[in-house]
Image (cartoon, rainbow over all chains, first blue to last red):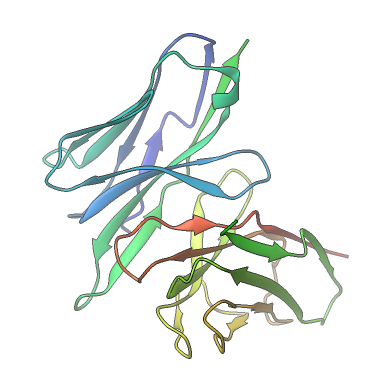
Length: 114
Length: 113
């Protein structure tokens, strides 16, 4: 399976601290995406990084991609209680022919304590 | 506002009953998807549609059926053949079936009576 795996499964930090989540995957990818899911809600797209990019920023989010290690990390700086959510990485990869598959990992549950 | 609407938010199924989950989008997206999420798990793809009148099986299609008669609608039927239907079901769409980000609805939670 191409499914990405997030690490750690759960993370608890104090407000103002930085949170780092990691994602590993198995085969070559076209791009990697990070999503956030608040409890009982749908997923919200955060950031997309292409296979030829190494780092990307969006507000307090920083994503890195290391294709040689088949891994990515999501850094949330100066965390807030509102950042409490599950974070998923999803990889876009090619199956037979030109078809593309988006496969989600099992997520990291982040809790930011006030 | 553009978005994806799933209904109902909660649904209960009796033994031997088929139930249909609704998904409507007004984003003018060509591609639509159905995912299943079990507690503490990631998303697993049930079915996807690249364009109207077309759909393909995902990783866990057994016991489910879909239709795509209109661009904006992609209903999912959970049939009685699905023996473990209790889960959170998420519908998503993207501009095309490609590497674009997906937009999600707020899900339907299905339980067994």
